[in-house]
Length: 251
Image (spheres, rainbow, N blue to C red):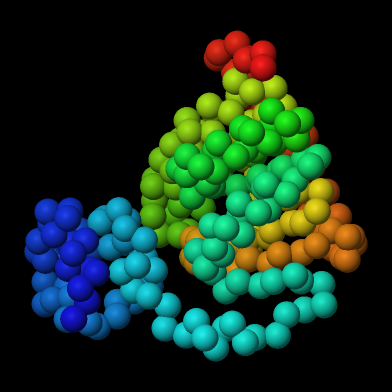
């Protein structure tokens, strides 16, 4: 029995028939999922989106121990099979350790924007003089729409980008924080500081949360990290600045 799925279904006040109709499957198929059968990936993503729940909570990863023992490249500090496997503490340490710059290049980055603690950390870093630059996908761009179609979530990605933009905008009241929107085709998302870069690869048909993340130290692999840093700068130069509606605070 999948207790987590049953609980999420009850919390959403949806029935087996509701889920079946939304996904275009037989209600008996939904009952088999509730009994413990693991759905195909496209169905797992659709159910998680419908129930507003994390996929890994509804269907925990089956082979974490084997992946932990996998060897790491001499160029990589760490490798994660999926972005959702990167602990929140690891993201926190990445941004908190920055002394000069923080750069975020994504389509939405909602997992950061929706975290009040992370937004507070980025604001605090900007106040300390750290340059905080955030690049978000233009919600109205064909690029974001197409990526949503490729992931099988349609307009959901554009909606996520809009939500992220609204949440990140609160940083614009702080000197040192800038936000721009882009319509670039991203082959990976980039999270960088002057010390380390996290590269979240994009895989066709899969959301970024399900795709691998590689941590690279800039001091030990300058050639590799400079490649990603240059890519970030190229997108930044062509991106559209988002002005602050409110006057900047003078602290």
